[in-house]
Length: 114
Image (cartoon, rainbow, N blue to C red; front, side):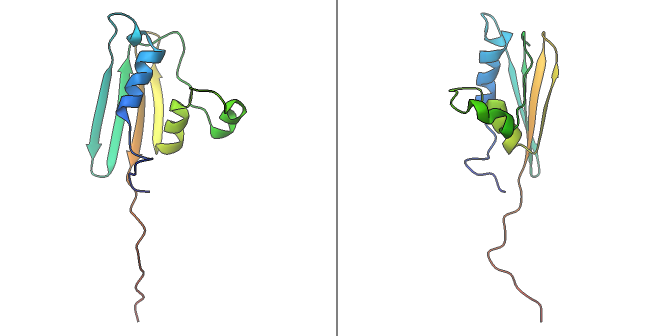
């Protein structure tokens, strides 16, 4: 799947999560968004000041019972759309990262050799 409007990496959304869910959102808080790319791969990492709880990547099946919630889908979407993702760190500093690889588009026609 190529990068499309639905699948493209969204660093602004990741940054908003750092402010909302970690100590980075407190007065004087800070966070860093690291965006790197090489060839067909984009990597996003958000480094924040940690917090009381750890990020949780949920499966679609685990999320469906609460499908009326107005928030809480950020890491769910990362888990569905990213090719690889994870988190590491502790309550003082945490990194949430995701990798997106562009996939070749399907050919519009196929030629057969005779």
